[in-house]
Amino acid sequence: MTREAAAASRIWSVAEHLDDILAHIRPLEPRELRLLDAQGCVLTEDVTVPVALPPFDNSSMDGYVVRTADVQGASEEYPAVLTVIGDLAAGSGELPTVGPGEAARIMTGAPLPPGAEAVVPVEWTDGGTGRRPATTMRFHSSAPEGAGGEVRVHRAAEAGQHIRLRGSDVQAGDLALEAGTVLGPPQIGLLAAIGRSTVRVRPRPRVVVMSTGSELIQPGEELTPGSIYDSNSFALTAAARDAGAIAYRVGAIADDAETLRTTLEDQLARADLVVTSGGVSVGAYDVVKETLSEFGGRADEGSSVAEGRVEFRKIAMQPGKPQGFGRIGPDRTPLLALPGNPVSSYVSFELFVRPAIRALMGLEPRECRMVRARLEISEPLTSPAGKRQFLRGRNEPPSQGEAVGRVTPVGGAGSHLVAALARADALIVIPEDTTAVEPGVELDVVLLGSASSAGGW
Image (cartoon, rainbow, N blue to C red; front, side, top):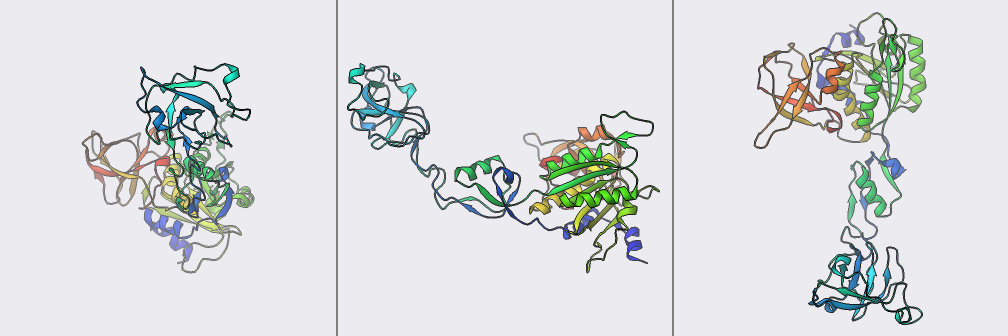
């Protein structure tokens, strides 16, 4: 029996198929990117803090900087009356010294001047309304802008009150971010705050998505007899973006081997991973299988995957039994060929493509969001023997005092039920050796979308 025939006759488990995919995928090489370009990427270096944050003592309130002794015992009845010697705004450079009986108006974020020990919020004062005549506003010609007048403080203040001390966030030399961190908005903000303009990361994978089938037309066009709208390329592109990839939607390719081959060759220039849907079963017009099985190439040593060839398999799962995987083109780009039925295609993405994207990003590919839940049904469910079934469901987290949540099936088992899939937020996992499931039984549930990174079967 040839290798191809042996592969075609073998029934793979979900775990075996995923293992083989991950064995042939390596994380993308790191590169230096500007901060906003690095959003969603995985950090490949430990980042330490070069300077303390904040870099200087500053005010956390709009108000007045004072010496604590000058406002000791201050009250509404007996306010402390202080001379205002200037205004301090964020970004102020040269700072006046606050002496006995003096205060300076200060804005949030402005540096603390010498001599100041606390900030009293403007709400604790009369707002500095007791101003002197213009002839007495300045002590000398070089007095700071805003000098002059008086402020009445109605409450005492403790040393350090409403002051953000230098290094109170992070100190110079502290570890800011560890390698392996996914850079979201807060992490990008921290990198900017400590002065980093670029960072070394693994880039987001570029995923090319295409559907196959002459019956497919684009949304917005008029349906003709025998045609359907191409939903798979939209769903899979959105799913790839949700998983952290840069996704390119090619759209529907007609059932023509040469067109598919040419399109693939063109798209490989911008792909770290290719995902196709449709044409992987035993139909007479399954051009994906026909074309990719004959790409040619040699098998890796000790591997079932040939260079330049996609191997098509039967997986012991429902939906999604027919699957394809291989590496094609000069850069041996991974390609995952998914079934064409919409539900089969999306379930296959969550089980196989999302872990592949995570592997390219340098993340743990098998890390998944799996929970236990009690099955909420009125009658027993059946499941095919020898297949791992993935039912669409709605998951409800545990209520207070409950150990597990509840999950309710959505729609039937048909792999064409797109409306039911749109209402689902979880996959209910029925093991291969289970043929009947009673109401109330506890099962594994995989949460879908960005909350999930399915794998680990």
